[in-house]
Image (cartoon, one colour):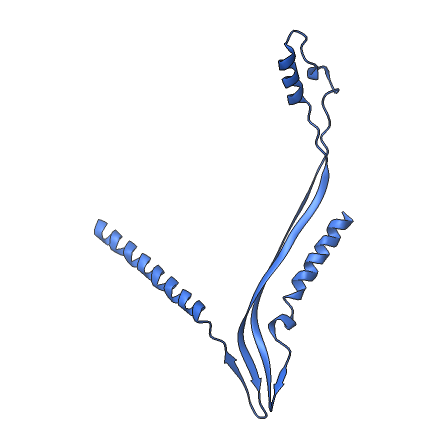
Length: 151
């Protein structure tokens, strides 16, 4: 169990690596009279699971029910024994994983007398949003027309 807790602590350390301030804001970079700080959108997740199971006993010597009937032929008796003898090992375990994604969203520019943000525009993301919106509107319109025709 101590090993399982240690593994969980390792997972939490991994999660901390990409969710801190350092993951969102880059180190300041000075260029001439300006200081630039990059900014990113960061998302992360963590999944864990664990369990334990008891050992299953062997049943070949526990009672008379496991003995093959003497009147049965040898092949049938062997099949019956295989059905009744089960041995499983018990144990415990834990597992999990972390994951994350980040994307740049802008640059903070600090001048001598002013501060401003230059956004990084993700044209692909905008395109996907437009296509999704148009598709949703089309489906809604199609359903509305179909309902109107049935009335």
